[in-house]
Image 1 (cartoon, rainbow, N blue to C red):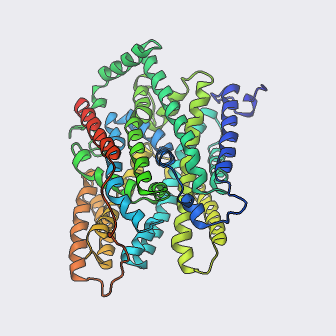
Image 2: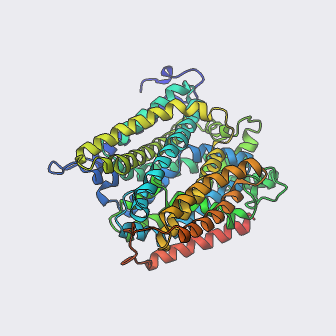
Image 3: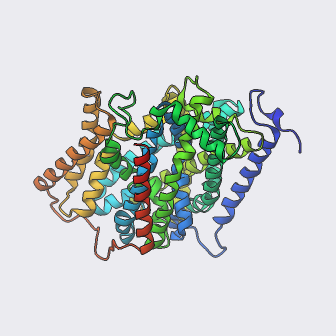
Length: 534
């Protein structure tokens, strides 16, 4: 094979074999995405087919796509960076997400699917009318473009730049354009049906880097070396193996003790996994409720595995790269230790986790913009025109994200923590209006507005006047306050006329025996993990 290293800067750590692996995978996954999303000759373009895969997704595609959408650069790079600084405690975001997924599958998903919900703003329209729908649609578009999409591209670019030596701007543009081309033709179907390949590679690559870094610490390339490396790391840095941080920890403000089990982390997880278009869109595209629930259970078990893949390599860097000035460089530094071939495989896993997650986010942005803003204002538009508008929205979103990524995130040490804190300004209100909107008939439109507004204002006030309060605790207290305000305002200012078309009639919260067994399994595993690493 021709030597391709001369196409990269001399600072690149990739050898020619690694580059060929990257190119082969890039071409293969692109071709696969076009094949699985190809329409039959007699099949017309439809907005439901483009944005929700025509409600044809099987459980394995749903579960894999949920994880592929979630585990991207901000997870791999960001959580490894937090593992380097904070330790295993950051894994609470992953492990508590597993039980959250079971709750979402059992209690929230049946309501969405019974009511034919296509988007989260669409649910709010059904329950509260167009005013709340438009408010939250604009909010989510801003959040997805300026926080989520920018962070995915920036952290992905950081990793690629560290390994290849390429200019960061070129990397950002390249990642964004490939993600656009990857999904722009087939929409959600192209993303979801190829995500099983992406997740398999992501898990394999993550296990390889975790295994090799720990065996390097342990001194031998074997299972014994892996275990010895883990024990050595635990012995040298015991403070990094506590899931529940004491108040004396310098990182207590990020993960405030027992609050990770009973406090604001629940609110953040429920908002992310239950009411986030970017995530729940996969389950909304399922063949049936039972199929969606199986996919969610599959994703829950993958979440239990994720800390080994995204946190442990960062912790291994405490011994293998002890003098890092930027925590988010921990994972790329560990990648440098891999031999030729394996480096290419892990690099592909990381890079295409970024691309898959970027493609998913792009699709959700175009879905909300098209179905919740453009379509209601122009009901005469054809499905073909709506799909075209969605594609244009995708291009614009990526262009904005590439432009603002460096100014917003270029000086941040732990981008993952930045994302969590500032998303937490809005999550309490989101959980309030969805939970009360589903299960309390008297919740009014005015109450929903007050919940959203109070969530933001109270969070800002706490940030300014109570800066010592950990943001996770702030999320919990703001949630309680917003709930009380929403209930009070709903009693004082009820809807003058019925605006809700949401129904719980025919909704069944009974789940299959298999789903129940899997749910109990998740709980048992979590009890074991928190007992060992308390």
